[in-house]
Image 1: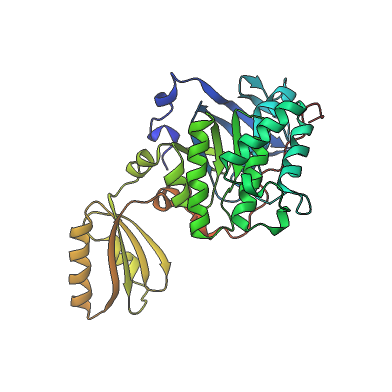
Image 2: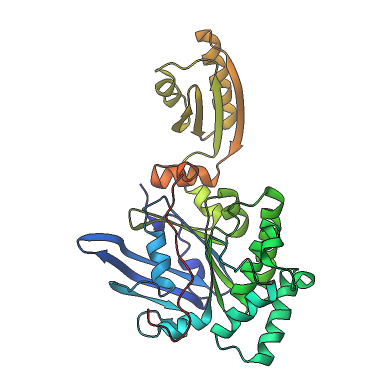
Length: 347
C-alpha cells in the first residue's frame, strides 16, 4: 500500500498560509495508539476532506483539533494557535457543525443564533448585524421568526450552518454536513458551502461518507486508516495514484467460484473487487480492451453478461485501494465530534 507521499500534494500548499497545521500528532489511550504520527496542513480558504473507515482515527484527529480531547504527542496549530497551549483562542476562531441537528426546535431561528452568539460574547450591536448577515448567507432571512421544529430537514441544516457562523469564525469543521438530506437539498448545501467559502473567506475541514460529495467539494482529501495517514492529495491526484485508468463493472447471470481468478488474468487488469454474487468491479489500464476480453470470455464459456459498463476511476476505488474497505459499507459510525466548549471553558 502506498503512503501519503504518493500524490505529492503537501508541496502544493507549502507556500500558502496554513490555517491548520498538524505536526506529528499522536493520541494514546493507555497502550492503544489511536493516532500515529500524523502530519498535514490545510491552507487558508481550502475545503479539506478527511475520510476514513470507522475506527481509522479521523474522529480522534478532529476532536484534538477542536480542543475536545488533549494531544498526547506532536502538536496541532489552528488559526495560528496551539490547541494545547491556547485552546480558548482556538475556540474563538472555529465554528463546529456536528452531524446531529442540535439547534433547539422550540426556539425560533433567530433565538437559536442569538443564544449562540451570546455564548461567544458577541456584543449586542454586532450580534444583530451578524445574525442578519448569516441568515442572508444561508437564505433564511424570511424564516428568522419561525420555530426550528416547523422547518424542513434541509432548512434545519442551514440553521446549523448559520449558527456556526454567527461569531465570525475563520475555520469551519463540519461532520457529514448533508447526512439525511434528499439529493436536491444535498446539492443546495454544496452550493451554499462553496459560496460561504468564497464570500466569507472560510477554511473548511469536513468528514463525509459520500464520495461524490468529497469529489465535488474538496480541494484536497486525506485518507486515514488504523491511525495513519495513508493518502493525501487533490481528488484528481488520488484517482491518478490508483493503478488502472478505468473501471469495468460486469454482472454475470450466475456466480461461480472461478470468476475472480479468471478476471484477474485478463491483460491490463490491476484489481478485481467482488461486489455481490456475479457482480464485479474490475480496475484496468484499458477499459475498451478489457470489455472485449470479457465478452469473448463469456461467449467461450457459454455464460451470459447481465450488464457491462465502463467508467473512469472514482474516489470509491481510491478508498478501497488505500484501505481495503468500502466507505459506503460502514453502517455504524460513532459521533466524530460535538460542539466545542465555549471560550473560557476548560477543555
